[in-house]
Length: 300
Length: 300
Image (cartoon, rainbow over all chains, first blue to last red; front, side, top):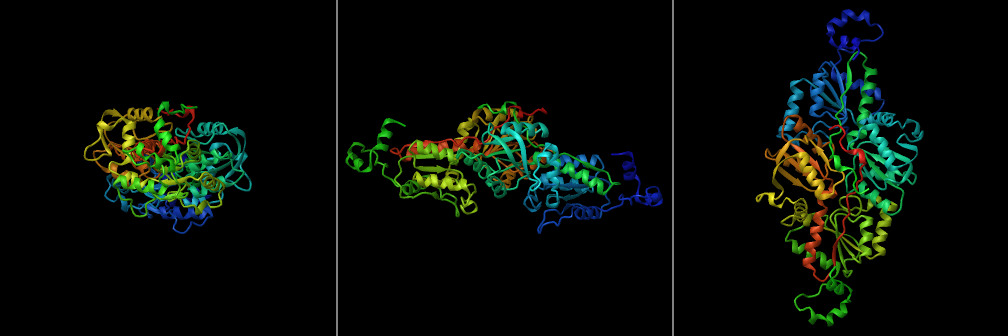
């Protein structure tokens, strides 16, 4: 945080009125309510949230004056603690807070983990807002922008389809190693032949679902799909079967978090431009998995 | 295959009628149709398939005379090729053939991978039957029996709840390493603190779903859940949050295949006892994932 932004965050709103002439170029945002911030962000995307969007307020009072914004892939309990420690009270999370896609509290209403998380949010007067559908619907897709930057794939991106890339010829294992080095991925998994040379790649961060993942692989030109997660009875055996049939198809699963997290770092950069007077930080949720030292592929 | 079984498999049914007096203790099964075999297996489980069971005929003619049975976790294209090479024409698969849970052919009706798989099954007169719900519903759960044997956990199994175990005190990483050594798992993933000592473990092979997985973890006594797969916005962050709140909870994800495959080896052993005159073999689908040599946890 710059000293100027820190100052703005600390000065109460009533003082700012008197200091207005010192910052003539920008009307201060330091007194905005969470609901106003959310509305401005949605408007700035230029996208219309889909019907039944999950981009709703998940907890907290939208009238809360925003002292700071934290963006994150997922507001785990540890992320919330870091937000509080950093004085951020508006949490913008890409994925659910309460362990299911619509953040339905009912299934775990009596669960102590959910109860403690909800109490923590209430006790610290946090406002939790999900920013999933609309960030993806923005053009360009905000998550995609962050991931392409992290991968260093911008120069390979198709001009007609931003989710498609023509990479310099390399085998699947080499591409996987490059992605691992770029992201720090601990639990990257490959389906298909690691030694197969590919150039045409489709990138689908997150868990797009088998329908969309297989649709991408059905394109004759696509040799490799890079995705977040996929279930072991859907896209995974589809790729195994395609490869067994002699088709040039492979799959790299980065993990859901690793495949999208840089897209919420990008979100923080973008939100900062919308609210120059509100401190905005990206808090990594971090890959949730640890692996064993000997878990490398012993059969290769 | 024993010489006796091989002989029985090769002798046509009409010859067996004349040789009936040579095998007085067991009426020959060498002329059974696939539908009869399936019925006998269901009956032998003593379990009632649930309403809307997925344990249905997926492809092929149930009147086909069974020359050999192959059990498998999942009848991938490579598994089907091995079955054909080994003369097995009844495929008993635990998981789907056609890339979705109900084996609905419609979504990929025009997909070349599905079309070629279906044609391969037809061209080789295979009969594909799914044996999922009823094998789990058998008491004891057939998948669980196979996995507990593979893990060497029989002596730790609870007498009141066969999915619960009291292990000798060890930390999560040590238990994971033991499971990795027993199964050959390449892509085992740990959520939570690998150094936490645990004794009380719940085992839920496959993808039981977040409701059941979290329900198991809600039990105060359960410190570690060992499961197949779980989505990254459900049980995974639940365990992260529980751990961040200071609760003694951890999760090991073996992968779906690794967490259930030995249960279909067990199935072959059991089916063999039902049809002594039909060759029965277990064909491993094998873990679908390869990992990178450097994918071990560099942050630890």
